[in-house]
Length: 445
Image (cartoon, rainbow, N blue to C red; front, side):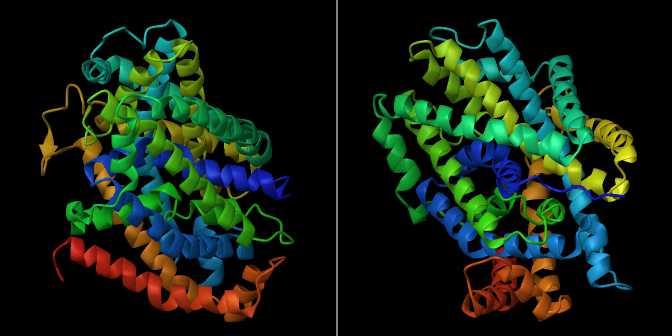
């Protein structure tokens, strides 16, 4: 049975970056930054991404590429007859939960895109906050849109790595960059735009709390798809003669760049139009129509942006569904399609309560959070930190140092110093930082 592989390094990088960027950088980062203090939070996010996220991304690449296996079997191959394969199981479970509420946001984009086709998103002088609230409160609409989003995800993943995930990512990611630049240019020329830039880029640490630090760390893991072994699964399709260092650095760089673009597109408009930075999950859907309303051919540009935003979101969804499909199909292309459909339908069912959290189930809350927010908090601030903590302990402890060095330095310009730095950061820095931040947020220390 021939194992699937990426056809090129750039295909792997764009697919991995698509998984990392998606909703994490475009949808979630602006609203989490808005509710967590602005510039100081963004600075913490950058630091966590570079000094914790990058070493962890390399660790997941090493696990996947060295074994050539899916998430669960990779850990079994490295540490047989142990329970370390539960890292992979935790990743699959986390992806189930993550995609269940992630697909809800994907459904919101589907709704706005369909409305955009008929010119129904931009309304002169409209209260876009109220319009968004009315849109996501419609139970049948959000469920149908969530189902459509998952249907597209299932079809692409069922086609496999090269013909599905890679082909889509090569076209969509570059187009997203171009349209983002157009949006930023217009956003920065709005009245009071610099107030938004100041909020986004000027650190004010008086707004930072222990919870904000945990959110910044969790956001870096969320944005880079870390802790769920997605990157381990993706790297298992990478040929042995390819470097993993350059792709890892490219993925982190692209993620931070898109995050910067998202902030520069959103926050100037937030302050120009008098919106609240702490608007929450709907921030992007409230701000974008207001920005495009002020542009020539705004309806057309909004439609293009929504299309690319939808595809960027789908690239993340592909990776979440792929980890479960790869685990169950075990490289058997004949089983891939049936598992894609079965798992996708189960995820849709699991996501129904999240989809209805802003409508008929809106009054059902726990700790002042609705079901959607609970699922988001559980994944971003509990399951992902636990997952990356286990990976940071597993890789230096259970993998042979010679194997790690060989994998890390394969076709890389770095030498022994690079490996020693990464190895010691993984052993002594990453797990300590994760534990300290997690315990501090729980007010245990």
